[in-house]
Image 1 (cartoon, helix red, strand yellow):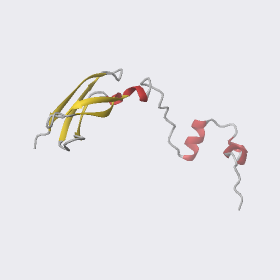
Image 2 (cartoon, rainbow, N blue to C red):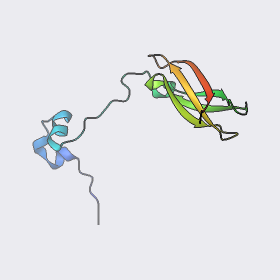
Image 3 (cartoon, one colour):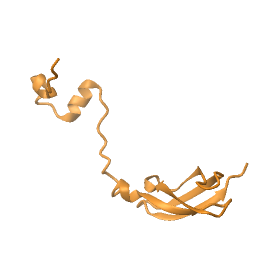
Length: 106
C-alpha cells in the first residue's frame, strides 16, 4: 500500500483561508507555545554546577534549570548515594546566584 503525503489544506480547500489559530479552534487543538519567548535560551538557563556532598565531601557535577527561579529539590550524591537537599537561588534573568547543599533531615 502506498502512502500519500497530502497537506491538510490541499486535501480540504475550504480551510485555505483560515489562519492557524482558527484551525486550532475548529479542531479543538491546543495553541502552539513558542519556547523561545521569555528567557534568552534554554541552553543558557540549564547549567552544570559543581556541588560538594555534605555527607562524604566529594565533588560532583549536576545540572540545574534556572528558568523557574529559586527552588529546592533532593538529589542523591553520585558518590555515596546519600540524599542531598539542594537549594538553588536564581534571579529573574535565569542567572545563578547561589546553591546550598544540605544533609536531608530524617
